[in-house]
Image (cartoon, rainbow, N blue to C red; front, top):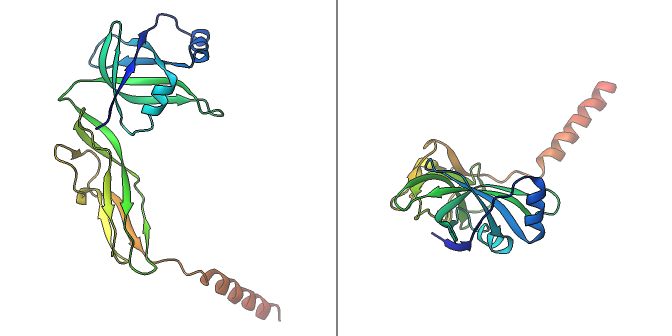
Length: 199
């Protein structure tokens, strides 16, 4: 599990004007909450935070004057046009604590022949120890044929991690490749029927 140290400053200015001032300095306003503690309003360095958030469920070690906490990102607001970070919500976590998170599901390998993978679920909801969240789960479809199916409950999760969602949820199945010629043949047949009706 990735843990990134980020310097944090406590802030006491709020509102849109204060937030704009923070962002002009290439920093990001954030709030830290959880465990019934008083919400802390923070300012974080923009570039370091942006790099950290590239890792799913990254664990952030916040350090600074009056701040020494571990947190998980729970809400990230970005500018819809330029994409820069506008605000981040951070959830306070403790070592040994269980948290529910979404982890990515990746597929590796090649199916047999022209069969293709249909993957309705790209993420999986799991419960894991806050400082040992898995980076994801991998499914190997190498040599698998049409009809191969994987349900959420079939996945082998890392030790200490349990499924939080429906075990019967379909994660992926291998299906036959659609035939490219069928739509055209169907259209030709329909045109023939229309011509006959006109006669």
